[in-house]
Amino acid sequence: MADKTLICKDCSKEFVFTDGEQEFYKEKGLQNEPQRCPDCRKQKKAEFNRNRFQR
Ligand SMILES: [Zn+2]
Image (cartoon, rainbow, N blue to C red):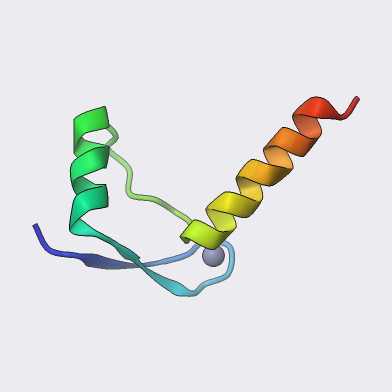
């Protein structure tokens, strides 16, 4: 497999879906490619956690 360049849904920046990550996704049985770059993913996760712990 080769590295793939994808466009982030949030910031529209290009990011690389690496060979290793593709392998990881396949192992997990995930059909979808990542929609967001690592930065946005991190941000989303932080947001998610914040919402979860804040009531
Ligand atoms: Zn992004």
